Image (cartoon, rainbow, N blue to C red; front, side):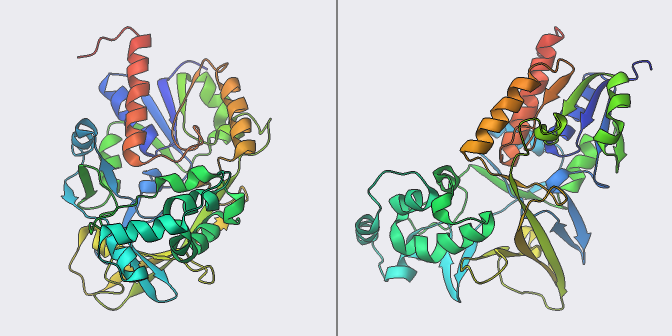
Length: 372
């Protein structure tokens, strides 16, 4: 077979789509292969009852980087959005992230010193080897027991004392009355959903949907100079070092015949007995005025290889195996790697875009293309 494409990109998610767009702008002929029947990866949104439903969980674009903010705004109009989810523990409602509203509800305190004093009195002081110890060293036992423990154990399918401490370090804590989850300079939701962004990124690129790369791999490798691979890195190497572990998710969607179901976009259910982790009410991302509303119950699931891999489990065993796959990948001269699955890491959207643009910059350097 002769070479037909300069690049084949495996995956039409954010990393692959940004790469395809940038390479197309540089004059390269690209082909994008996507296993799903839709573009957009986990950012895919679909219109239901005039509401743009986040099919694979809530996605809020946030960044401190003005360049990345301006970059994504080239493809959609973003509305300012203040993400302020709430926690529901057996009917008691708490503000997230942990802030003075949370501490007031827990302990009836209204000043910072008293809140800090209570937390300090409850903090775990010993060596930190697991998530429970990490969480208690940050916020003490009351917050851990009511707002962290049940939600986290449902999410990961393991006891908190079996989980690595790194998982909890993303959680913001504030001794202010500000209940904004993100503290970034730029936070927004695209008016009209995320799918339009991918339509524009890929509008001049050949895309084949419903194609499993591994069923056509031998043929694809013969018709392209380079492959940008965003799929599971362990699968590419036929699981030589074992399968990497993930947690999966599923959603139960309901159309409710009322204007307002819960009054917020995201409500977390932090007790262990409630089987879902959160309810997403999609209309509040864009604050659309509709007579009906659409909600999604989010259920964590064990990853079995048939459902979708969402959250990498970066414990010691999996990290070791992943690093072994990275060493193998260095021998694959035809391949570039990127994205959540190939890099086996959870990234926010702005981080994915930044890593894709970094790869494109490296490709330019390899091909002697000067930056404009």
